[in-house]
Length: 96
Image 1 (cartoon, helix red, strand yellow):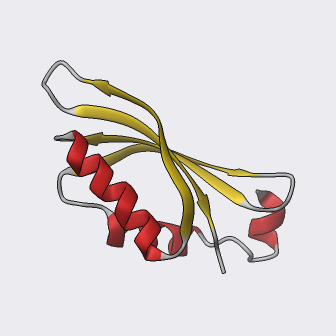
Image 2 (cartoon, rainbow, N blue to C red):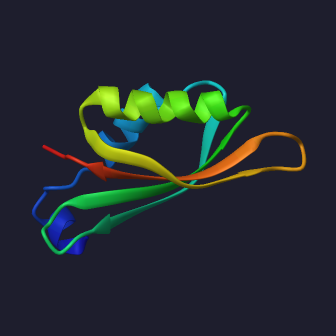
């Protein structure tokens, strides 16, 4: 990650702005971890909370429609005690 940041190939500002524009009101990101793969691509793993499964599904669809994220899928999904949904989403970030 330090190499990408040092070469200005990875912009936290761009990543966070793209997430902000795709995030439905009913979904919150509680944790995020970018991971640089051996081929230089960046995979972003996010823990999210949504009111309903459909809200998390909408977030994933928004990520794909944004054009900066591909291979978006939910690795894990569970119900919280309050009825909300917890999910771990993984996506490849195609930074330009």
